[in-house]
Each structure stands twice: as C-alpha cells, then as structure tokens.
Image (cartoon, rainbow, N blue to C red; front, top):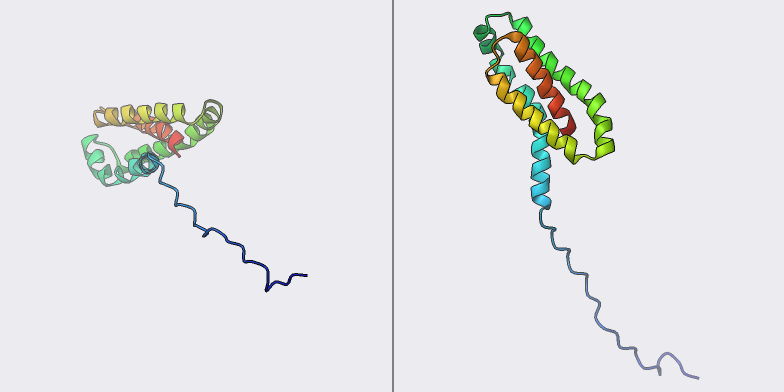
Length: 135
C-alpha cells in the first residue's frame, strides 16, 4: 500500500491571472456624447436665466411675462416626455434623440431672432420638447 509520502508529487503548471480586458474603442467617446446630450437640457435653462433682465428690456415687456417663457420650456419637457417616450420605446432611442436634438438646435437658433414674446415663448416650448428625448 502506498502512502502519501511515497507517491510522486504531481507537477502542475503555474496559475496565471487572466489578462486585463482591453478597453473597448469608442467607450469614452460614447460616454462623452451621451453626457453632452444630457447636459444640453440643464444648460438650456441655466444659461437663459442671467439673460432674463436683458430680454425684458429688449422685448419691452414685464419680467413676469419673460419668466413664463421658462415655464414654457418646462411644459415642453413634460409634454415631450409623454409623447416622445413611447415613440422612443417603439422606434428605438437613436431616431428620437437625433430628431429632438435637431429640433432643439433649430429652435435655439430661432430664439436668437424672436421678434416678440409670443414667438419667444413658442420657441422655448419647442426647445423643451426637443430636449426630452435626451433624458
């Protein structure tokens, strides 16, 4: 009968740790692009706030009326969520995201030349609507 002392030792290969996974190309770019899309929504509101007194003077209206354009942006965000949310579920995220971004950019360019408060308010609603797919 053999004992453990007389049995030859089994030779085993050294155990190596698995190689670290190489970073996937484009992950950082994707993160930056998605982060940019998400940041546009708050920037739409935050960059607008310091301009409220100037807009009030330029359009010769009251500050309360100009503040309603900010409310319009939030209404656009809310209504956009109700309408565009199901569309992005049905058609995927990419198409609504690109269409919403195009709408936001177009509305932003038109806000610059808005001739009166009513047009400015409508364009701000469109800005909010266009930002909704990015959230």
